[in-house]
Length: 262
Image (cartoon, rainbow, N blue to C red; front, top):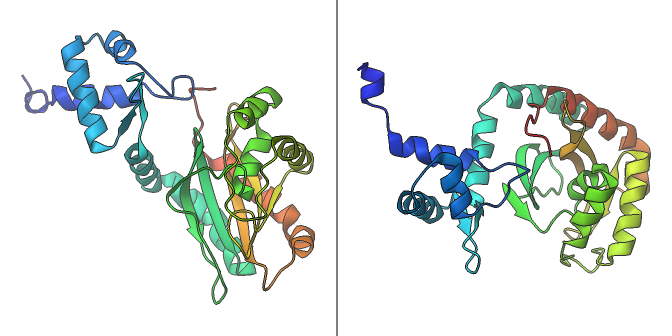
C-alpha cells in the first residue's frame, strides 16, 4: 500500500461526496437518495448528514428531514472560488473600471435563492454599501437580483417569482409580483436592471447578468452602486448602461462553465 493510500480518509471522502451530490438539478436530497447514490447504509448516511448539519454545511428540514446546502457551504465555496485564477481574471476586469470611474462594484453568483458575493471594490470618499458574503431575500430588491431574474428563461423566471416572498426592505421595495414581472421584462429587453432605494435608503444600483459560457443561462450578476446624494437614476442609466452591459459580457467570458446545466 502506498503512503498516500495509507493516509487516505474514507470518512472525509464520504462527506465530500455527499456535498458533491448537490447541484442545480438536485438542490434538496433525502437521506435515502444520498444513501442510494453513494451505496451507503442508512446508519452511516445518517451520521454523515448529521455531522454536516452540525457544521453548517447542510440544513435539514424539520418536517421532511430532507437536506440542502447550508450557509457554511456557500461561504466555503465562495472562499475556494476566490482562491482560483477566476478571481484574478475577474479582478483584472473590475479593477480598471473601478479606477477609471471611482464607483463601487459588486460581482455575485446566484445559489438557489441567495446571492453570494465573489468580488467587490468600493468607491473612495463616497457613501457606499456592499452586500454581505451571502444574502437571501434580495433577488427582487437589488439590481443584482433583478438582473439575474431577468436573464432567466421565461418559464423559470415566472416559477422563481411565483415562489418568492417579496420582503420589503424599504418603503420603495417592489412587492407586487405582476409589477415585478413587468420590470423584469423591461430589464431583459434593455440588458440591465435598476434598483432605486429598494434595498437600502440612499442606494441606487444598476446591474447586468453574468451568463454561463456553455449554457448561456444566468449564474450571477455585476452591479455599479451609487449614493442618491451624488447621482440620479436617470444620470446613472445615461452614463453607465452601456458600461455595465459590456462589463457583464466581459466577465461572462472568463467564468468557470457550469457543466451540470439546469
